Length: 122
Image (tube, rainbow, N blue to C red; front, top):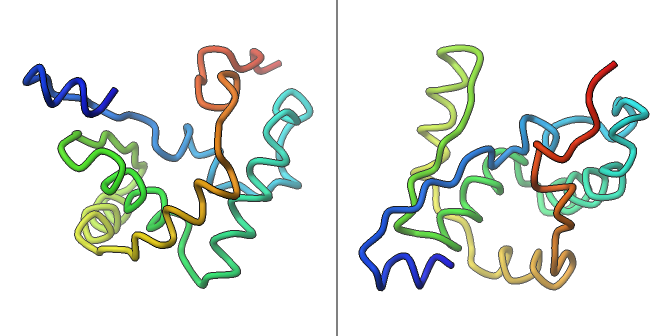
């Protein structure tokens, strides 16, 4: 889709690259309603930890590689988080990490990457 948008001269906005914070959580602290994401969160956390990568850095750098012309929309709660995200956006990452992640996690399920499909909080 990114290549098609570029061919058509369209701007792509990629939002929620941290999946509403889900990608940064501890898999053991997920609510029962979010148990569908436990394996994904654990796999992502382990991948980053094993390579000594901050999860925020990998998520931002991965999307910058996959969609270099897209505008990334990242939520933040503090000024410090905004500053950190801006810094990380300028930090390159080896393309080999992105390729390795694609081999480990080749496809996301729709419920995982689409927060509108997540169960309602109770």
